[in-house]
Length: 440
Image (cartoon, rainbow, N blue to C red; front, side, top):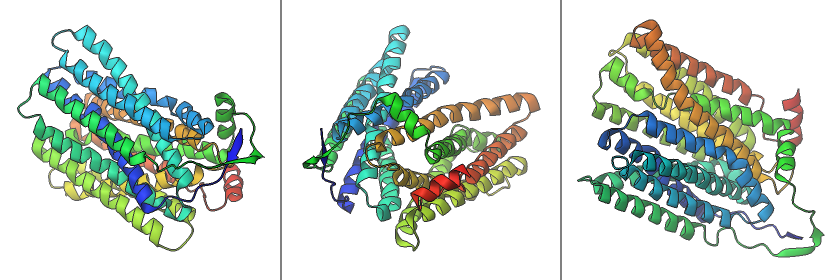
C-alpha cells in the first residue's frame, strides 16, 4: 500500500457543502425522533414510552460510531462511508414511517419493523456523521475550525427547522398515506442532497510509491491505542458529562413551563423556539469570535467551552430559582440565556473535536470522532431518561412539582460546572503540552 499526497485545506464553499450533508442528516433524524414521536402518541394513541424507547435505542446503536470511524480511517476515503450511511439512514426513516402506519393494524409487526428501522437510523447516523466529521477534521485549516464547526451545526439546525416546517404543512390533512409520501420525500431529498453536496469535495489524493505504510491496525488495537492517550480519554469524559447535562433538560423544559408557569402547549412551543434562537446566536458568536479574534485556536476554543459551561450552569441555577418563584419570574429571558450558553459550549466543543482528532498523526481521525460521538450518543440517551424519571421521582417524593424541578435543574447546573472543571485541563495549543498537562 502506498501513501498519499496531502490535499489542500477546504475552501469555505467546500465547508458549506459538508454543512449541507449535516442538514440532510438532521432532516431525516427530525423525521424519526420528532415527527414520528408525535404521530405515535397523538394520532395512534400509543404510550409515550414507545417512541422514547425507540429514540433511546437509536442512540444505543450509535455506540458503534468508533467502528464506523475506524472503517473510514483504514479505507483512506470518507465519501463512500458518508453516502452509504446516508442511504441506510434514509431507508431507515422510510421504514420507521411505514411501521408507524401499521400500529393499529398489527402492533407486533409494527414494533418489530420499528426496532429494525431505528437500528438502521442509528447505524446510518453513526456511519455518515462520524465520517463527515473526520473529513472535516482532516481537511479544514486550524484557523477555520471554530467557524467550520459553527457553520455546519447551524446548517444542521436549519435543516431540521426547514424540514419540520415543510413536512408539517404537507401533512395537513393527516392520513397514513400522506405521512408515508412526506417521509419518502424527506428521506429521498435528503439522500440526493447529501450525494450532490459531498461529490468531489474530498478529492482523490495521488499515490506516493516511495512513502510506504504498514498494514491497517485492527479495530481493538486502534481503540486501545487512542484510549491510552490521556487527552483523548479526558476529552471523552468531558463530552459525556457536558452532553449529559445538556440533554437532561431536553424532555422536562416544556412540562416545567406548563406545570409551574401554566403555559399553554402553543406558548410552550414558542418558548422552545426562544431557546433555539439563543442556541443559534451562541453558535454564530463562537464561529465569528473563534475565527476572527486574536490568539491561538485551541486556547480560544477552551475559553469558549469553559464560558459556555459556566453560563449554562448559571442559567440552570436561575431556572431552579424560577421553580420556586413561579409565574413572576422572567422565564423567556432565562430560557434564551440557557440556549445561548448551550450554543456557545456545544460549537466550541465540536471545534475542539476537529482540533484534537489528528493527535498522534493522520489515520485515526475517524475512530477518535467515533469515540467522542459514542460518548455524546450515550449521554443523550441517558440524559433524556434521567431528566424525566428524576422529575417523576421528585414529584412523588416531595408531593409537589416545584421542588422536583428545582432539584433536577440544580443537579444539571452542577454537572455543567463539573464539565467546566474538566475543560480547564484541556489545552489544544501544543500537542506535547496537552499530554503533560492532562497527566499532571
